[in-house]
Amino acid sequence: MSITEPPVRARPFIDTDVLFAVHPEWLHDSYVYVHAHMSETNQEMLVRIWKSTFLIDKGSGNKSALVHAENITFAPVWTIVPQNFSYTFLLIFHALPKSCTVFDLVEQIPQPGGFYIPDIMRNKSDVYHLNLAF
Image (cartoon, rainbow, N blue to C red; front, side, top):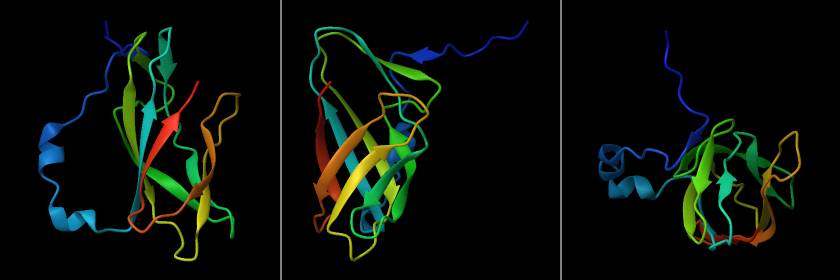
């Protein structure tokens, strides 16, 4: 008899050894960091991210792929966000083109309800804090 992992996790596991092993010089790299913040909701929610999530340059249409996610599960596994609980997760993408000034965050999935945040103004640090409303 085999034991299978449940399709829902209360909180994804974050390997703290990996987090503490990051060298400060690595923070000056060619990645884009998106910190997504979800406000408290009056009901429990399920969230997940698909690997088909991109940052899309409004000028060129270039897509920067998602390379890593923290504190959110990848589809098909769901993450539970309890009622009346603020939730934050991190998405890391490949670099945007140097010419990019405005981009969209688009979760391209075969069903309704994907994340879509349009017209994000580019900054010098390529670190963003986005508030998600549901």
